[in-house]
Length: 359
Length: 137
Image 1 (cartoon, rainbow over the protein chains, first blue to last red):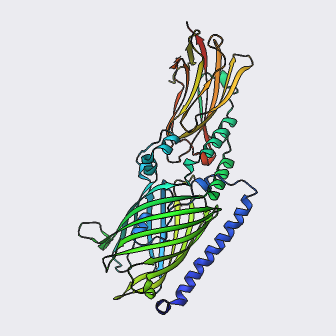
Image 2 (image 1 turned 30 degrees about the vertical axis):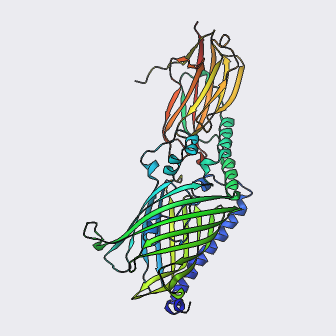
Image 3 (image 1 turned 180 degrees about the vertical axis):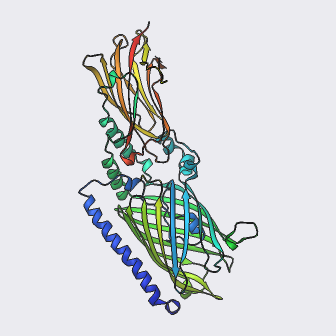
């Protein structure tokens, strides 16, 4: 800890960290106020189904720029964009961008029915497999770019909405109740009307949200990522350098009531030494429009506690409008500093845009 | 030049078994419907609600027998939405079955839908239509 405080430019970092944490606190407070309001009035259904529990980008994990160290194991979303920046004490701000998509749906994968999704483990895993690409500025070479590729597959998720039979039944009941064949007996031809708002399905999704938040259960995700340096920012065989791989397994257990414990086991190649193993756990609380987590983790690479063998962090996300979420994280991290490794505080912020959300 | 409008007729065997209405939807669509059966200009003799469900198909036994169904109009409205937001193309179909076989329709009651709204958006596609039963020994 002495080493940590010695190497950190506390006034500069404190100002930035304070600003991030203050913003996060304000957003959480606002979200909680909304939460209280929503218990009295119906909330738009898409807030839940499209924006809930958007997972970290595997490509950002590959280049070590994911906001959280202990990542979540939730199911994939069809298309998500991430805009990240991070700043470490005494270092410049790094900006990056990532795009995640579900290749199964993007490239025409189909489902015959919900039963097929529930009964076919292959299709379910395919539907919950996410591919990701990312790029970020290099901190060591201003003419180079970091690039990352990643893929993650959710092996199971007990909070998967498509496995919620009651949600389907309530949607069916609402659709059938709203349908009215009156007057259709005199039509000379079929009439197809697009995008009518006859059935209000808000209650069905609100009920599902309450069930998921209060349901105990687990999720397990496996991921792989590859990161490297693109020298001269040009992609060619000679310009790719320092290619490193990562493998990880992330797990989530939900206690119900929005409380969860997360776990991760990660192996990754290092720049200076062969490879590292990282394991961590986090406690997370979830609301309809926010989540907040505190994490601890172990890294096998640093040889001393003061140089980052153990780390701590906190992160939070607030979904402040449809499809958009703001993520902020602060954590200690082992960073190569000259010829030794030092534990430094790193602040990361990210904007997540779930592009599958309705405009 | 638009195609000529043509009513849909469903030919059933008066000596065959009871009629079954099947509602089908592919692509994990949710489809809920209202059906009404009546003689033209007369009160409704049978009405029911039906949904395609998780399997994508459900059956309803029509209580009116095949001998009595002649000239009756079966009218419907089906509301459809996409349960999986990424899958918005699929087919919705109404079939009338007798003794395990589809009745011969003069025009298929089948609709190829695109850009079906996600259920979570609170929007749906509406399909209104009808068929007229005819008996043929």
